[in-house]
Length: 147
Length: 147
Image 1 (cartoon, chains in turn orange, blue):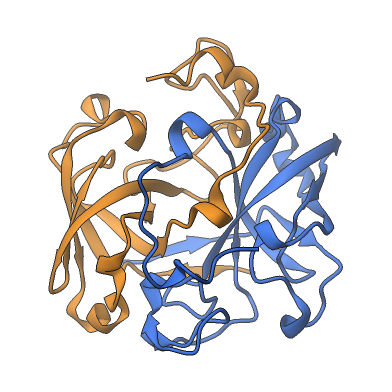
Image 2 (cartoon, helix red, strand yellow; image 1 turned 180 degrees about the vertical axis):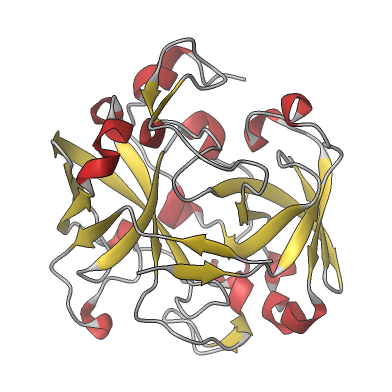
């Protein structure tokens, strides 16, 4: 069984080198542009009323994976599924960014943490009632996830 | 350009019919089981220290899409990217669930909102420092996202 994903657009960012790209959207104040293909333009209706959106994208420069990795924020190995490391069995990334404006098929966003040219797979609304969890434990991130 | 995704496991849930499946994980207290393929077992190292995880999966029973849809929670049409509706250009779903326990390759989770047999594509840690947004506006969800 396999699923074939085709980009619906591309993410433009100031970051052209992996090692100079922010580790997480929450650590970035960079402005980026989400260029949605014109054929999907109608799918953006009402998106401008949202303050934050999920971007789902392909880690297109991350081929291959190992099951245990030292993530950027630690010097110990962890299972890939306990990390956000980009080299994954299915290289899908998610970032939550602030939506500043929409002009036609182009969204201007703040807090971008992807490489310039990243293929966009999906956009979803960020809805705190659905997405904010309380009483969380974050394992190895405990001392390492602060900005 | 296309990206081929292959399931890393399957999600077991009490839900076998679409119209009886919860609309969001946040509205579900159902217990589910994430069965990761044994070949990916090492990738789960340290996951048990996390309280909440993202499941990324294929909406395998949602073929096709329209760019504007009436979502389950509203009777007005919105752009597909301003909704969480399952029929999408790239049918990837995300749910945040509570991780109760791990036994080998099987994770027991609470708050499952996927159909039984949903193909699992990825697991990522939920990290509030990265994922919790403030000062949000949620557009058409404003009066409709409460439990």
